[in-house]
Image (cartoon, rainbow, N blue to C red; front, side, top):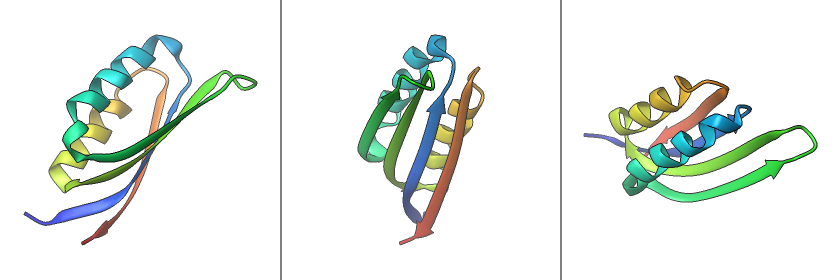
Amino acid sequence: MNRRIGVVAIIVENKESVQMVNKLLSKYGEIIIGRMGVPYKEKNVNVISTIVDGTTDEIGGLTGQLGRLEGVSVKSALIQK
């Protein structure tokens, strides 16, 4: 299967979803190359940027599950490599 490289941006507005976000990121850890999280306290949100390398099914599984969480927004940008 073709692999893709890209970034997944995650914005967490609901603090109750943080634990589940971290659980999902750990579950998909094999496709995550790097991760940077920044708590933006003034706006009461957490911003997480991840670099991923995986199949479209793997990346779609991660982003789909994250996007179903309450107060979590997800966007991705991918290239085929």
